[in-house]
Image (spheres, rainbow, N blue to C red):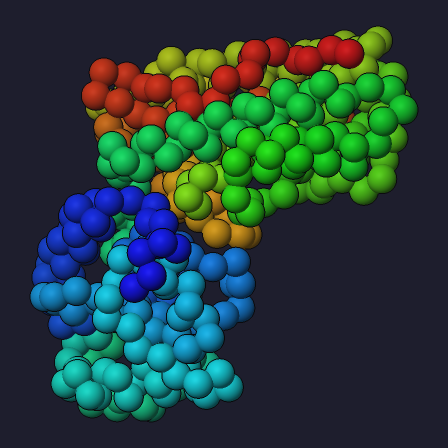
Length: 383
């Protein structure tokens, strides 16, 4: 190992504790070995990072002992910098990664074992190929194993999320400062991106999202050379990234004179978001918090578009997603907030093809309540 280039995201004690939790969960499912292909979950266990989502990687986690990292020899060079795993198996570029993995499983005596796989990550073709390579193994879906563990952030993870929140705050400030009549949505996005990267952000799970005027009323649209005009709503979402941890942040700007309907929608987003955060405490049912948040924007429910999700878990991620576990804050959610959970909590209201407004924060649930990790004035930004 070249110690000069090595830069682990966490202490080896943190990785060791994660491995222990993974293996305890494997024991409950009766697994002899777990295969990890999901990039963020692989990073969670091994520390392995690179910026090519197409490069094939896998991790083999035994019921006891340390994980094995599997990739091409060319891509394995990234492990020198980011992974704590010393057991590494390589194959040649161009060789079949699944066949290489199957050969390793045979060599290690797992050809007739109970093998956990991530069916939510593998394609049907990949899963069929693995079964054909090892026809005597028992294959079990372990897609939910790691997301459940990743839902609860440790002290070290919380520190990374705070730094990501600092970067998001820097990016949002730059974006809001750039908003002015005559500027393009591209200008706003570029200012946010530049500020976050200069501040220390790594490559992001999603580029800054900026939409202006009528285009802000289109969900999941983004910048496209549109100039800002008086009265336009400017919909902004950013998320700085620190050691692959993201802290999303959303705000809305508008150029004076602000239309009454834009101001009303912006105020409703603010009130709904603030109400939700006030109720994000250990032991509180997520649906109860969501229903209270709903009351803040109910007067507009027949006028505007709302997707019904008040928040979702965030943490370690790779593009194209910073969501780390399939846990949503909705009016039907029957789970309770617990310390260590971290959410991007958001209310976004749109008038189709006319305007859109949003406000959000990244919030960590603590023993005594919560901690807001992003820090931008919670108001419609008028320029």
